[in-house]
Image 1: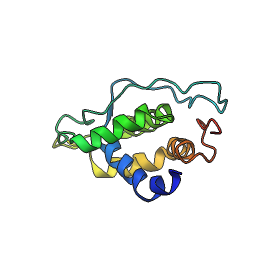
Image 2: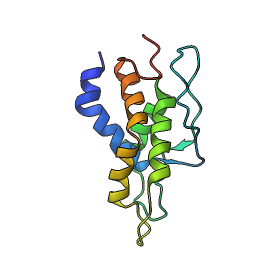
Image 3: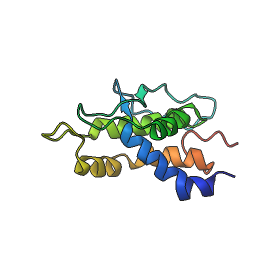
Length: 131
């Protein structure tokens, strides 16, 4: 079962990858409903670039983690989580994402985070198909 690794290490890796991801267009706030027959919405997350113009280059490992999360069965929910975060991030005078906006965004996007982690852990997230 993947829930223990996800909780222990995987989710922190996904958060690291999240900091490296960017979305190119705003997403709907609809997480696809709780109906397992309704596919989650398509997202426009770009795992290869940061949010602000001077953010450090995205490393191969965070990019791969992000791409794998998007390609997984809960990818739509992960994409919505990333898009929620990205909409709330701000760039500092140095052109880099501010750590304060990142911390604030994580708090503001708790619902999207819960939906994704619930789905990934198979314990009732909005995108959980019950499998």
